[in-house]
Image (cartoon, rainbow, N blue to C red):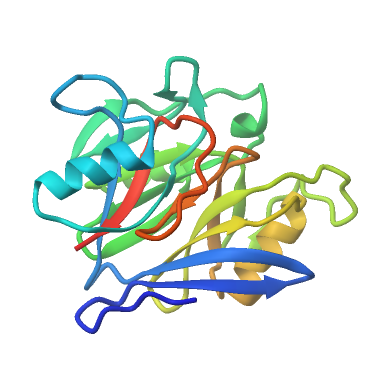
Length: 230
């Protein structure tokens, strides 16, 4: 399956790797409009659902081609780490060193600024200070410069549905959501070896979902939501 309008580079594919099916969204920042959403400006409350964001975009004359969850969040649908939207920092960097996947260091930040994107380790991001238009912090970092996170074990028995985002050698951004449970190692290697993304960030686990104009797999509310629209 693919969705690739003539004037837009966005592409959605089903990819099988290592016996697992993945939904992969490919975004070209030179042609596609990738944005992060959290709070509805009308209500001041989290959008929570893909359909709510889709409705908001429709009101402004735009069509949502794709949506997926952003990084790990805290109770009350508040991003657990850095959340930058429209150039404004709504939640600051979280320096937690213990507690769940988010703090399985190194963790990192996915950010975009104009036509540039990066997945950067949190400490390096702070030093780089890229002044992004949109950014989300999550963890663990799946890949850094092609190297798999040091805590990942190929034989790990921690299998869950997983979603992540990678910045790839062709300059494009690729989001991936597994159709079934995979461990961190397999997920990281999928980004590196199949999607050709040397830098990738884990977004979330079992609740991860995506939506297109024809399909919506969301079962739980989200804080941050990434969209591709035209």
